[in-house]
Each structure stands twice: as C-alpha cells, then as structure tokens.
Length: 143
Ligand SMILES: *[C@@H]1O[C@H](CO)[C@@H](O)[C@H](O)[C@H]1NC(C)=O
Ligand SMILES: *[C@@H]1O[C@H](CO)[C@@H](O)[C@H](O)[C@H]1NC(C)=O
Image (cartoon, rainbow, N blue to C red; front, side, top):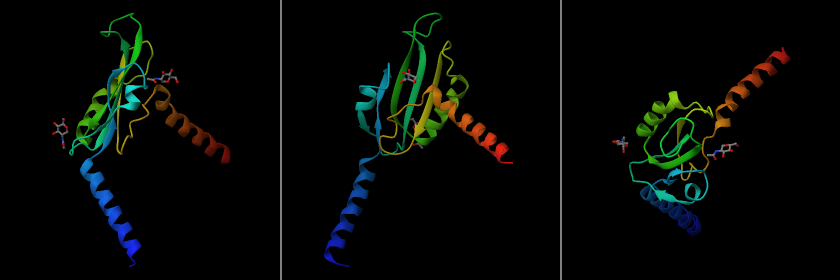
C-alpha cells in the first residue's frame, strides 16, 4: 500500500467515524404554513439515539380545528427514532385522508441526513395506485 492510499483510507475512516458520532441531521420546524423558509432552512443534529427524521403535515383551520373556518397546512419536522416514528405514522393512518374539506394529519419517517426536505403531499398517495393500474393495463394489453 503506498502512502497516498494509506492517507486516503485513514481520512475515509475518520470521516465515517466523525459522521457517526455527530449524528443524523434533520430539518426541523413547528407548525409552519408551508414547506418553505424554516422548514427547509433549519437543520438540527439529532441526539445519538435518534435515527430517523419525522415529517408531519396537518390540514386544518386556525387556530383550533373548527368547522367552516379557513384551512391551511401545518408542517412540522423533527428528529425521531424508528419506534416512535412508526408509532406516530400508525396513529395518524386513519386520519390521513387528504380530503380538502376535512381536517387531516399525516406523518412520515425517513432515514438519512436531511432526508425530510420534501414533504409528503396529497398527490403522492395516489401515484402508487396509478402505477399499479398502469402496469395492470400494460400486462392486459401484452397478453
Ligand atoms: C401540496 O401540493 C399542492 C398542489 O401541488 C400545493 O398547492 C400545496 O401548497 C402543497 N402543500 C404544501 C404543504 O406544500
Ligand atoms: C424513541 O423516542 C421516544 C420518545 O422520545 C423514547 O421514549 C423512546 O425510548 C425512544 N426509543 C428508542 C429505542 O430509542
């Protein structure tokens, strides 16, 4: 092994070690109206036992969810761990309707530094179904 390779390897190992110690980075924000400003600019280094980024998106009226009032998005992002995040997502599943005239809330988890930049949004829930439909039709046509 020559000197250059040796130094490079050492640097890689140090980098990996440092990134493990420093921890996961997530975007964080609390009840913002949209996925701009704070929600895409505030980055937090998570605690050592937090391994996922959590995104929460609510649709409802201000300040309390009340009938007939003007509705808006509330975007929140934070550090979490797999257990807590999965539980949150599970809890919101029944109310994650994306129906505009109802109040709803959805949550999602992701792994990797700053992985919660983009938020889950209404249209994303439809795509997989459309995809499966498309494949089914294609398969029918190919028969
Ligand atoms: C979700 O998508 C719709 C349509 O593309 C957009 O109008 C809305 O602002 C998005 N929601 C958020 C919270 O960005
Ligand atoms: C996950 O986070 C929750 C809330 O902060 C905490 O109570 C729980 O002990 C954590 N679980 C693990 C496995 O770290």
